[in-house]
Amino acid sequence: MAVTDRIAPSMGWSAFSKATDLKKRLWFTLGALIVYRLGTYIPIPGIDQQIFADIFAQINQGGGLLTVLSTFSGGALERMTIFALNIMPYISAAIIIQLLTAVSPKLDQLKKEGESGRKKINQYTRYLTVLLAAVQAYGVAVSLEGASSSAGNAVANPGMFFRATVVITLVGGTIFLMWLGEQITARGVGNGISLIIFAGIVASGPAAMAQLFEMGRRGSLSAFAIIAFIAMAVLVVAFVVFMERAQRRIVVQYPKRQQGNRQMGGEQSHIPLKLNTAGVIPPIFASSLLLLPATISGFSGQGGPEWLNVVNALMGRGQPLFLLIYIGMIAFFTFFYTAIVFNPQDTADNLRKYGGFIPGIRPGKPTADYLDHVLTRITVVGALYLCAVCALPEVLITQYAIPFYFGGTSLLIVVSVTMDTVAQIQGHMLAHQYEGLIRKSRLRGRKS
Image (cartoon, rainbow, N blue to C red; front, side):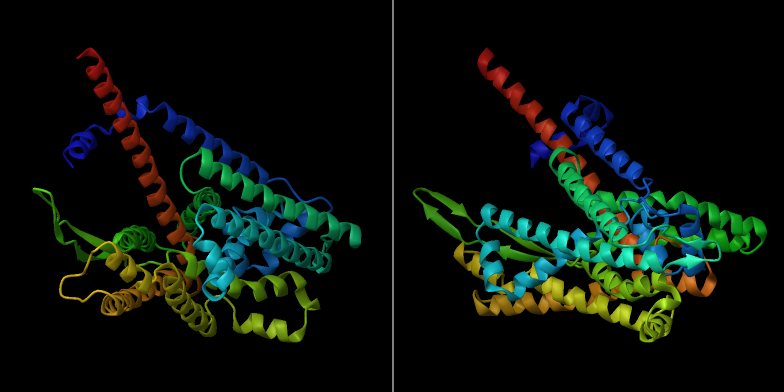
């Protein structure tokens, strides 16, 4: 503790300038994100970009649901480029594998096998990513063939060759982004997959702010409304940071034991239970399921089935049914994913194995019941927090026509990734400081 107190004040710009490994990691991360951003401007062959831009604007008037998908892809969907699917198939595959782990004994056993089991699960996730990306890419190809406007069809030469080209291009783009994310995680700073989504969301920020001020210049929004919106955005971000850091600490006591003439143990620790254990997974999964009908019917135009058009009308952005189902799915996946991430029975067994106990609670099943009771109560608060943060932007967009393209899911991703990346940078700097202390102690030992 004393060493940490001595190191923490010295973690400034001078320490950063000396951390050469950290600077290399940061430059690699920045270079990889630049490559990703360049890829969002490479169009898919066989599509008339101007006609497609007109079609996209027509089916997405007023910032519709497709804007959310385009935001996640950094504008790649709006421009229909090689990264149009972005990394979302991988996110969906990872979520599906995690959900299957809770119900499949085979996958659960692999999870407990350590590093070898983790590698197999990652391999299954990659296979499922390719499958999901291929299905989504084929759906996009078919939808593009049916997309048309007054200027003509978006696809000049429809047919199997065009569909095969789109599938190969989009699947290849998703696989490349999956590989790029893994490289950022291994050789850069932060979680690569999260940073790719983060870069896509942040890239749409300047355009959204420009549109907001343009609405103020035209008189659509008053100056007071713009100032109030900016102040509210700052408060919401501060609230998200506070809630993401909030946790319930359960005190754990370890008994004292006699070892020779010395008395060992007696330490006191705690189990940190995060208020939002599920993170951004529930909003992402809920958004993916709700955006699927809108995406298919949007690109299909009038050629889609009648029932799909009815569903699209009822599930339009800002509609009461959309908000109700959206909030319900977020709450459901919050509880479901929390149950997967944290197992009270396993935690109670580990405490009993190492001699730890919660003061006032008997070891074993009573401890598991107590942990489950506390976790359920804080998960209720976490679910309400996620629902409020995700529903507020939808109301602002639909009711007040505010171009708040940072929806609830986007806002959570931006804040969570920023906090995680900053924490990893501080961890690298702290490790560099420890290495410096170790080298100094070795030199002093040699001199003595």
